[in-house]
Length: 152
Length: 185
Image 1 (cartoon, each protein chain N blue to C red):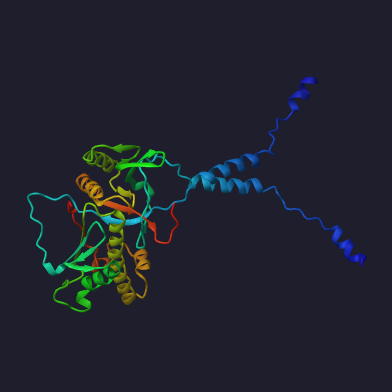
Image 2 (cartoon, each protein chain N blue to C red):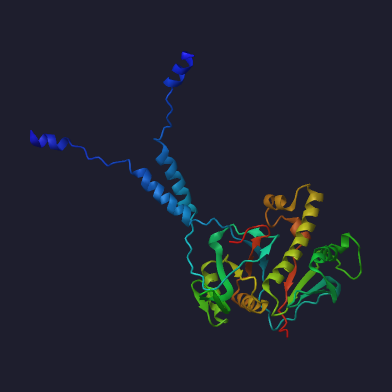
């Protein structure tokens, strides 16, 4: 009986903590690399729609976004459907042509990701598409979630 | 003597707090990070229309007209259809040469064109559902073709070959035309 007790009393358990900062730093660096700080302030509401036959955009730096949705007025109210490119709402739909053309000149392999609110009407989406055709930015992507994915 | 002693003093930075600082930064980045992958339906828009050039003639049997109105009702070649039927209808139409060989449907998958037209009031959601079904039909056809030829699904095949060597893609090109919407009522 006493033999058992002695055995237990002698063992000391300690987890080495010397390497902990290294592990933390590794995690830190991973998240620093992965993080994309949101660069635009959304002024329109975009609730994504869902689809099943979708593809991933691998080269994120080629992507330029166009947001289409009801303008956020604050206090839970929404206005008319507007188009937002970068940080500004586009007043004149024909200005998209020039804006996108300039972007295309900077990046010839540009992909335009259309982030459209699911309740928007096709009329404005089509107008934007016509402008994109004129600008020559022909590669587009309708941003959607996967069918079984939870809403963001 | 005094001077000598002073020079021996070693400056020491306390290291105990480093882990805490790292933790703090880690937590900040953890909170800020959104690992969202961009997913969506890729499409290629046609170049702007040339006013001097007439559009190329298309035989009627090679064109599948899908109309979607503002209430989500679907008309395929003048006949009503439901969204669940669309996929099978598109498959039958595109792959007609290898299936039923109906004289009213497409001659060849390469010549088949699926045209989607909406009203201006049609909700975007419904349009995407429609597009999803059509692309799903093409994906199924491509999957069947690669399974038959190489015994692997299309996704694997696509990863193995370059875009130029992709014969399945050539066999079933996604000819989807997005017509300008009707002004509607």
